[in-house]
Amino acid sequence: MKAIYTFSALLLFLLLASTGTSVAQTWNNPASIDVFVAPGPIAVDGVLEYFWNRPFNGLVFGPNAPTTANWKSVSGGLKVGGTDTGPYVDTTYTYMKFLRSGMKLYIAFWSDDKWVGRFGGSWEGDGMFMVVRKADNTTQEIKLYYNGSTLNSEMVWDTPVKFGQGVGKRNSQTITNDTTALDNGYVAECVINLDSLGYTTVPDTLPVNINIFDPDHYAVGQPEYQNVGTFYKSYWGVEWGGIPLQKSLILKSTVLPVELSSFSASMDKNGVKLQWVTATEVNNARFEIQRSKDGANFVTIGTVTGMGTTTNVSRYSFIDKNSFGKSVYRLKQVDYNGDFTYSNNVEINGTVPQKFAVEQNYPNPFNPTTTINYTVPEKSFVTLKVFDVLGREVATLVNGEVELGNHQVTFNASKLSSGVYYYTLQAGNSTSTKKMALLK
Image (tube, one colour):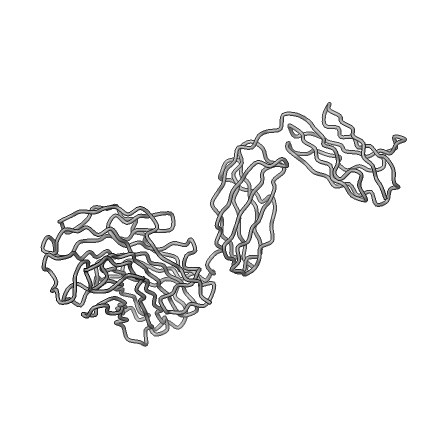
């Protein structure tokens, strides 16, 4: 069963008021967007699979569009018609993402538009207008939009069927071409057959221009340009029909990366505890835990096996026993095929141990193994030895330089007889001895 993704305004909406032909904004205007391979099947039915909600880059259309690390505003926008279409007061945006599966390019876009419909008697309506380059360097128009003239008209795939298909789904309380109540937006998705564009293999890049049209407050029977509503268009590249194509979709061969829901670092009695959670995983072989003191030069300090492919929430942890002071951590997530991605960095200022200490072994009494924890305040030459009641050395557990911090050693006494033993830790001029009991 498909997981239903409910779309809403994700960020603060800004109240806009303008009577000119444009609304001031600084646009991100990225040159390209990466298109990953979808981690599962996609059905073009207006109900989006869970992975569309994963944190990968997409476009947000509309004036003064809210942006984040993953949401990029487009090239520009303008109000159509000037003052004869009324003041511009819209506070909604349209979000768009891209995925690929084989020779099929999937596009999903959604909006919380308050007035869904078309521009009066014009053919132009809410939705996507796209120009894409074919293999022979000609272009093809792709249109998925509301242009019906009757109440509650559905979205139309106004493109020859050989190039693909598209569908729109009105959210609850949305009635197209109606102004008696505010709408609740829509969700739309389409698939474009790359082979129908003349490509025999997946191209590295696909040049495009994309427009989102957003006419507002036009009811059935109202003509366009009647000072009853507004019409705003925003575009990635140039305005509709503009040539040459200015933007590119970069068609990657990598599957959409593992979705990391959280990644944190905290102090633990044994060192720095790293914890992270994934919402979904695809072909996840392992996580490599990497540490840096300057935030630039990282070294791998451990690995944790991944869950492969799963849609379940997975929780992971790792304790770095040898890091104190400022440390920066990141995760390198590695797929089975060797592809990898990095997480965001997390930083922590751990407390530097102030003194030499050795803890009582645990468990005690034990059979046949026990754990000994100790702390050194600076890099030191350390010995940790075990003696019987007659003072004879029976085991050497540590004999060499160790880094500052908390350390842990496991003692296996399977070859020794039951009885009382002593372990002595020496680091520099500091020595500590504790007693333990082996009971078989």
